[in-house]
Amino acid sequence: MRRIQVVATGGTIASRSGAEGRRATVLAEELVASVGPLPEGAEVSTRDVVTRGSYAFDTADLLALAREVRGTLRDGADGVVMTHGTDTMEETAFLLDLAFDDPRPIVLTGAQRPFDDRAADGPGNLGDALAVAADDAARRHGTLLVFDGFAFPARGVRKSDTMSAHAFTAPGRGAALRVVGRRVVPLWQSVPSPRLPLDLDLPRLPRVDVVPAYPGADGLFVRASLAEGAAGVVVAAVGAGNAGPELVEAVAEAVAAGHPVLICSRVHSGPVEPLYAGGGAELQRVGAIFAGDLSPWQARLLLAAASTVPGTSPAAVVRAWLAGRDPSSDTGS
Ligand code: ASP
Picture: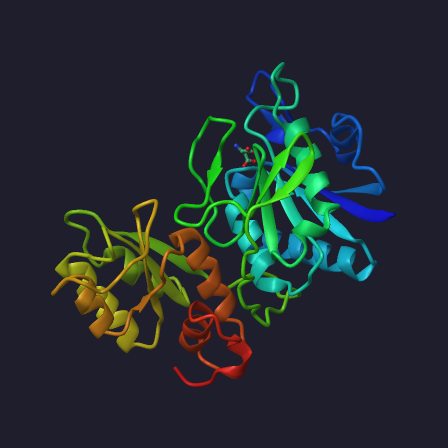
């Protein structure tokens, strides 16, 4: 018997429509009841943690969800399914992926259409997520996000459509598993990312802001963010990792003052590389860290989590993690 714990947190999958707009009100038991037959040999229990839209979560909420998963794994569950709003699901999935080194499946899912929609996609997605969580093929993939018949490893997954039921993609990476009629079909075995020694009992993660680049972007937001106490910033750079001269100057100042700066792209797909004189090449020269194909939103959590690791610099932790090394064994920057 596989013991699967459903941890419900709200989102569209749990929402009904009303005069003020959609509101998450549906609890875990009703969500599971909507799925139809459960995976053979699975015993499903439910727990409601919060019932909210994920657009309202902060890092204190994300850590609370991670503690919930930790408790569930410690209690001996064989798999965890978290129902969650789609807006920030890629962030929660990534934080769980950073936090846990466990072969048991941790699976997030949700919906684009609310529970009371005649064509609700939540029951199908939750049924697929339960099938994945109960299947051996889902072990050792790290945290997975199951949506519209595909299971994506957390690193690199992005919400890529605001409305479509095919809401998520993993540009340049793809899905690791497919679910066909509740049957789990392995596509490839992903290599789980290194874990971070993240203290889940912290009240919240340190502030890290995402600063966008665009024609005419200056250093205002980088300086304002650091003045507000940010541990570092992530630049959502243009193209393959470029920014204009004033933003580059503010990044140089930030790094010189000891604040790590990560470079990602505002482009939906592809890695960043320090290619252009005065742009990306200059950002690298002044000490910014190029974050591969990580989205600005996942990179922000990586840097925030790295800033909590004792005994080493956040930049060293980030560099080790990006290189696929165990961050806790790295020192220096
Ligand atoms: N659109 C969102 C959802 O799918 C709202 C949220 O993130 O909670 O659930």
